[in-house]
Length: 543
Image (cartoon, rainbow, N blue to C red):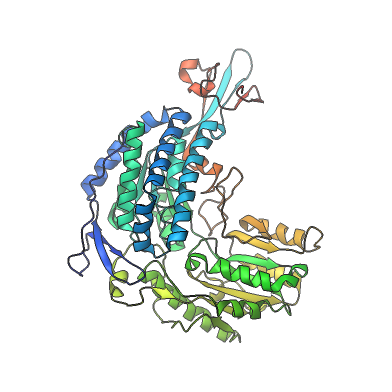
């Protein structure tokens, strides 16, 4: 069984923020609704010990057994869907339709990672003769306890449960999750459901636990028991974890994101109205709080795409951002973008409303800030954390390294760059920071520009979406959700899809092994029924 959580939710009796608790705020109003106390160092230490004790037990279970655990979690999420969506709505303001959809996808992806584990390819199992009577066997083993730092913008997809947690469990690792301060009450409830489901499914004590609080998170990073860290959030937060964990050589799989580009070829520009509508819909989706948000669109001059974007923005509603700190950072980011565009001679900006751009410190713009002070400072705002979407027109020559125009602004804002020369625009693409994903809109299979654009982009992104917007990420066998630094800290990894399990295993080999020295999957009768490479030849289990 897994650990029963001792964390409780405290009702809001006093508006003062307790420094030893994560307060819960409604982004739609700014009102506080209770808080969750931080996990004490002693409790964190006990959780770590239990995870360490469970690691070898979990590693010895069959992949099919872990598939059953993940299916049980998914069933519990579906059973409690209405309750979870209500809680998530109160702490994120993302809307019931979005949250129902995200929770459904979370349950489906949890089942998927169980199926990936049971299929067994991720184990990389193989045996061969290497001369004489000598043999060599190689396979992947789980790393051990994994710490997961969830995101603010995907409370179900990248939180207390979601891609990182499910893939780590599927790979055979105990998981300890650090709750995000943007939704502490939801985190506690989700953790209770996950823990109960694992216990009912027979998972050992220590398989899964939740901690709350900034210091508890640091204790995880520093703990000798933790073998890997998964993080989704800001570049500042991700790199701080990378640097801190480097002292122990612990891998940090940080998915951080930068400005994701969109390139419209000359032939594709004929559909300018449709492209503009799709662009606005994509960069305002979820109030622009997606790591895959398209942030910079290159379009042929004269196509009228920026004018069409302006027209779409006039119909776009304001929406609440997740926290007061994110809203304040967004407004500060707008100020920086407006100043950079004006300094470059571009006064063209439009929005759906008159959102004031306050000159707050850009240091407050981290989407994953753990501090509660920023939220409490704006808790009395009648409009909550609502902002308006905006777009800026910029020139090609102003997109150079170090330009403020190329810094990510978390929220519903994007840039449009109209180019006269496609070759010059492609050169500008190569000057951008690498990113998670790029979109290319073409005139069809005979478009003479499309192959060159895709070829240039593949060196800078993890995924190219042709004639599709980047915000959709499928949980599938072929998905790559990653990219070169600084989009992520590990360009070889993906945090979504079948390859996500690879982050949490490492290869080992045994020479001249007897069956007792090998995992069941490499026994002659292959009871795990996994693919294996025997003497160099891939062999599949009999159907």
